[in-house]
Length: 199
Ligand code: NI
Image (tube, rainbow, N blue to C red; front, top):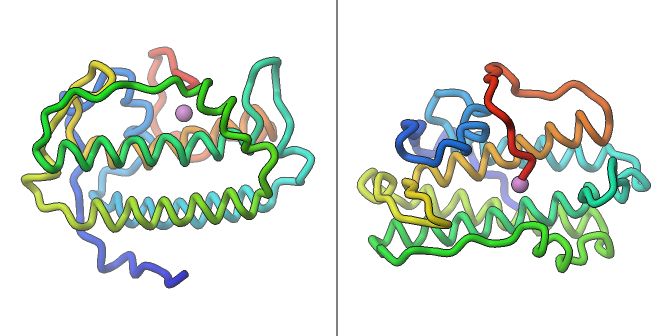
């Protein structure tokens, strides 16, 4: 796949706290405040592919506790979540005020059959979805990026959805490092005392 020239990607400022639900700060907090969210989406995809490809195959099916997802299921979850968040962003960007439902992430992971898939296949799909995400957000003007809508009962701006997608990936990569591989997390500049969500 042709590499995206990250220098050509437009800036999208970080959302203010009023633009996303309170629990979602854990995702946007993982990103620098430089407006280069589209470049981070591209660069983080490359880092994630490299990182996941370095994990021994047997570890990809490991669960660190009963009922927890495997690393393959986490990857499937990241892709599911990204598709759904871009869909929400599309509707809100097009000035559609229909309230959108949430989704049951554990239910989706259970039915994803990610554990039966090759890791290269999962990573290829992730790369395709990510490129589509970048192309979509790149196409939006400032008015569209600032539009808001309600999803899962929470009002959120289009640009906050872009930051959610990037932060959500980093959040799960940190969980893999800490709980599946027992390594130190990356991108933890700020610690807050509020309870973190694992989803
Ligand atoms: Ni999640």
